[in-house]
Length: 282
Image (cartoon, rainbow, N blue to C red; front, side, top):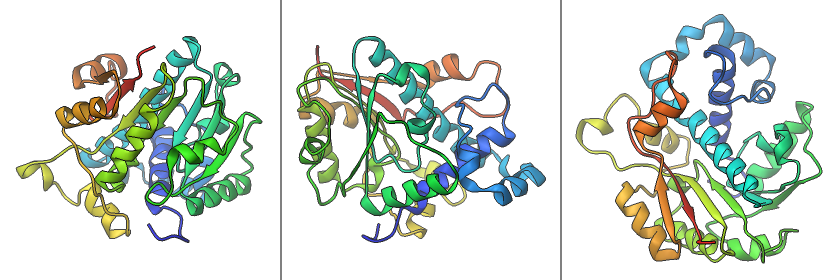
């Protein structure tokens, strides 16, 4: 990503979340009424005029992953809040809308969005243009993870680094160099006990799996945002444990299907494990 250019793929994820609101079955897997506002009236009209363009198996599979990772993270955040955690860092937040549509249970949570300075500035401007406001419990921390220190960046915010923090990192790690990913894991693992990390990771693909149309990775690379880091679940677990986390749990494909997709015919359940939660023992 260029220093002075916001992320293009972040905008793409916003479009995908908006599509879910506009053409998929209700109740939605992720209720996000703000995303359609961000893509604009003209884009909404185009989608509604030709929804079939977005219903290929590949498009529905990608949409399923994008909305599932947000739903899973928000469910995990709610569980953390109910257990007493009151601080949330959205790491590489992109155009995620949670901070602007937060449910009542999140009103007691200090929310800090960390993102590349150019992307964060563009997000704030786009939300303002769409008439979307942020609550008083939201704070923004511009930081280039490839060049800056996450712990130092968090220390500059109003977060209490002596208390547990819930960290979500969705759609980010693939774009970072492996050594940067490790420093991110180490920084989060250094937070107080009871802190948690929920993350999405790009799985390793083999053989025919890697050649189904133009992959998400190829599309991102074509936009100047190549993927650098992939994991299989065993590697993720070991990396997180090596960095200091005490436990790691994955959202299995079976659990995801049972918990989120029963009765749905619009979106396919995940075929691969791509989401996990790690915790520092309380």
